[in-house]
Length: 440
Image (cartoon, rainbow, N blue to C red):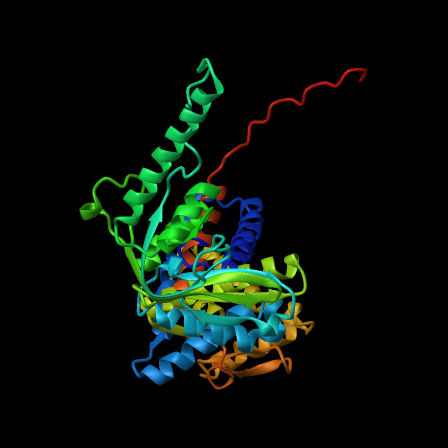
């Protein structure tokens, strides 16, 4: 669920648990697991058809952006950033719309910087790298040609285990050191011959090569970790180089401006006007690392759901509305289904109805009262009725702007039904006898 849609993981676990609870009652009533699974499959098919009927597609761009905002708010409501959900929803929607339909979230970087409050988080255009520029090198550069590399820029040592070099005098040692320096100088010259003005390396850059780059007027950035290098290469449109003999085969990255910025008390490097214009960085601020980790997780869920929704544009009303509609569709078919399968279908509908009941419980309201009122509202033809947790009553979800992604809800339904069926088919669990402890 997390890989496919990015959100709805808790819903899968809850629905799967409820289905297994209902299955336990049926097994106690001597209904065979195979029969239960067959009934569940019919119910899942009916629920899916009803969910597709409930889904709507918005073609107008401005209205679609508002739909995305509603989905983002709904997703963030159950997370720690709840009190800043409006701000974070806007950040997430703006970042996803920059991707222009792509679902490659590598272009959106989440950068965590302790300090300030969650409300100070903002969206920065381009890519921000949490590294320092080398000593004596330019700190601002326009119209940049960037080489992203993964190569050893420390002094070339003899890296053979157990190798020894014997010399007769100190002059010979100086000659070896000079040869090492010459070799490094030749390597740096090859790199600079590519016509670059910025060199980013995954590994360390020692003082001597840094000095050479400074003479050539090249900005050198060292130790950009592996993820940073991979992402930078994608954003700048470059290939990661490790050999420098063929400048004609090397793909260099481009960007309009590289400069240093301050975030809190730290200096960072910003790449603006990158080759892939979709690139952006969300800078997260917060009181502690725990808050930042939670904010990153919440925003990641929202970004995943939104990027999937941009591709599969159908949306559905939230607040338990669709669960009650699906349960109603299954109940309507139960009367036409002969045999024990009908009992399994009823159980599936009951499990679906527990989701709005849990929403009501979490809000601190009377679940039985609200769910029965919600069922009555749907029976009266109010197809978009759901639970309003601010006031603790049944309301129209379209008016309240509580929306969910169709794809997310569909995967919750399918994944939970499959997982529950898989567990149900387990006949017995064979356990090893626990090892006897000494002295017992």
